Length: 376
Image (cartoon, rainbow, N blue to C red; front, side, top):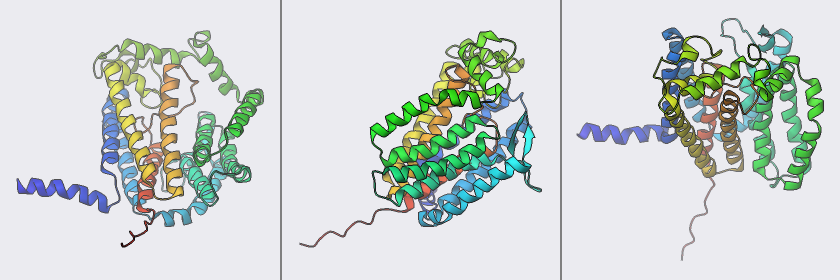
């Protein structure tokens, strides 16, 4: 009994010394374990694929712990260098990147696995914007906003040329979230919204043919049921056929009979819905909600403007990941190739997300200095 009490009291102490938040870590581990469980069925009962994903998640967890050890001052000092390095990597993708499925989004460095620099930029952009904004008075003024938008536009433009519309929009959102959290007048937000609506025709004209087809398929999937509309039709069929409790693990027809493409990556939640039903989806959403709520609590506790802005923006970006993936799989958003965070099969995305959680934990290391109480 005494050993149990010792171990029970030791675990929180170890986590605290490592700068880790116990509830957040527990939520992340549950999501990843649930994802590996579903991945075995969605990936054709391939233990090799499950082991590969587990190794990637393990690497991400190690990096998360390492990042959490850094003092925020050290992170701020490294941010401009990291941002510049990320931009250089994106330029390298356009010059010598690896092409796959008509897109040039990856880099292959000898001795290292193929990786996608745009995933790394998803955290470097909000880091850079948070550093820039926190150096000025809040609420932010228009000149500060404009410079911040330039920092966002450079990597977004490079990613859009790969082409990767989905990732470029997520990177843009991650930077803009920082500016919104820093405080900006509603009339400027409304003006930006009107300007964005006016520029939609220009955006449409500059989209690639397959991107335009995705939008048209979103509006009317039945127009090409055996071509561009196939994925979303099969996905909605899988979700609807699962009912409340599902057909059972490894018993879903859409994934097991290969009707559902990309079942282990972008469309993995359709497999979850078919095999474990609405109940399984609700459990996953509850875990996501817990992680988001915990991150927002940590963001509010950060002792500096930089820490609050960065933590809040990273949390909102994580939410957008979830919303976009579930939205495209269920047919309420166009298919843009965004994985379900920490659940879909994939390496670079999972690692960078876990690093972002390490940054949120690291932000807690810097607290506001309180004045000592005055003596009577």
